[in-house]
Amino acid sequence: MNKRELLEKASLAYDEDQVLELTSAIDIASKAHKGQKRKSGEPYISHPIAVTSTLIDWDMDIDSVLAGILHDTVEDTDMTLDFIETNFGKDVAFLVDGVTKISQARAGMQDLTEYLPQTKDNLSKLLIAVGQDVRVVIIKLADRLHNLQTLQHMPAEKQTKIARESIEVFAPMADRLGMGRVRMQIEELAFSYLDPREFRRLSTLLKKRLGKSTRKLGVVREEVAKALGEQKIHFEINGRVKSIYSLHRKLEKVGGNIDDIYDLMALRIIVDTKEDCYRVLGILHTLYQPMIARIKDYIAVPKPNGYQSLHTTVLTPSEQIVEFQIRTEEMHEFAERGLAASFHYHEQKKSKEYTRKKSSSVLPTHMQWMTQLQEIAGRLRSGEEIPADQLNIDLFGDRIFVYSPRGDIYNLPEGALPLDFAYLVHSDIGKHAYGFRVNGAIHSFDKPLENGNVVEVITRKTSSPRKAWLEQVTTTHARTKLRAQLRQLGLIESISSAAAIIRDKASRKKDKK
Image 1 (tube, rainbow, N blue to C red):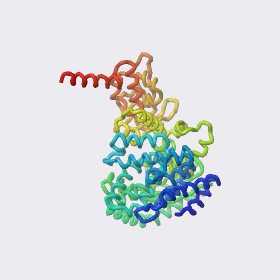
Image 2: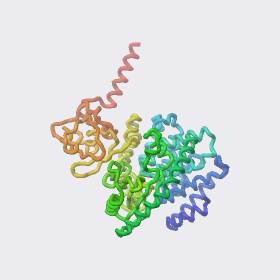
Image 3: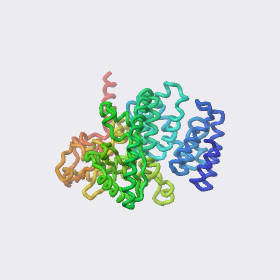
Image 4: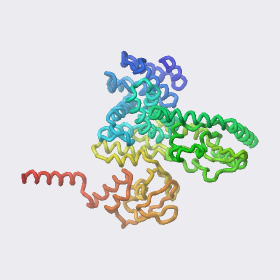
């Protein structure tokens, strides 16, 4: 894609003034990168143009698009953030700075067996960049996607390093943001470099299997379309083929037997309303025998990243096993693009309540982890040290939804304990916790919560935090609130007091010598 094609695409999504601003940004970036080449031999500006094109496809706001074209200028040229701020405003400069910090954090990653960089400095840069504005991550994902798409031009060692980093760091980030299509693209490209032989084998195996079942599936598709039409339901129906990497992961779980995998190809039905989703489910179960254990209602209880859909697997009269996914157009859009599709910066910026620091107030429930990330970023900026393993649990572990007795939804990491919930509701609720009921039954302090639990905190004014509670919380948020309360009660030393004691001991040892 060249400058003219990019501007033509932008003119369909943004107003005239915004397109003029983008034109200026392209000219400035082209001048800054003049003479620089990619490994492919192409002019370097081809990369920012590709990244920007992707951001436009994702319907990102104009500030993100401008940051996309300028995202490598501060790191790779003489351009300064002050120059970007003067010409394009504080928000664009902020986003470019955030992407630059993530790049610098990446450069320091030594051990990619964990999802987060190991050094505190690099971890801090990553969290501070991400925590202040989720758009930083979205821009970085567009950047990473294009780098993977052109990875063939890199040396073999570099290919492996980038592919491993992509599958272990950036794919989970995309998944956390609900960006299913991007996660799949990253995983597919990365896997093709990490294990090219297995990638080719599974590709061939999948093609053979699909070739046999496509005709049979076509018959099912026609039967379903006829039944839905008779019920006057407005719908779209199409096929979804399992990705190579997903197939690889699934085969690992079933001992390598592809006959145990029923969703190599699924039929996806998109309807107008949530009510229609359930009507379609009923019609499918009238036509075919449902496999009861494989009915999943992700509309009533969404996946932790916000994904919503009804899943059912049925057995046809010809003994063919078919999986169906049923969702609305809005659910489908989110399943494909996640937060990039739902985080409406255009509308938010026009509202008085929108500021970057308060952006968490408009985040959907499944994005509450972003609020916690912003909190952690603030603590890191103030110089506080937080163990990396805590961050790994809080930010990149699997998430669960739990409910208060009033029906309020709370998002916690998998493995969270009742006190984590109590402190998430309010620090005073946690402080006076005396016991817990989960789904109406008494629940111990050390028993993990599960997705869909209804959690009631039993409080007493006379109850107060205990030091032993430090072993009964898993989230950074709960531990921080609890430690502050314990220090206030004099049950643990403050950080400054503890440091003073250590210094005194060291000083006395020195005097003795």
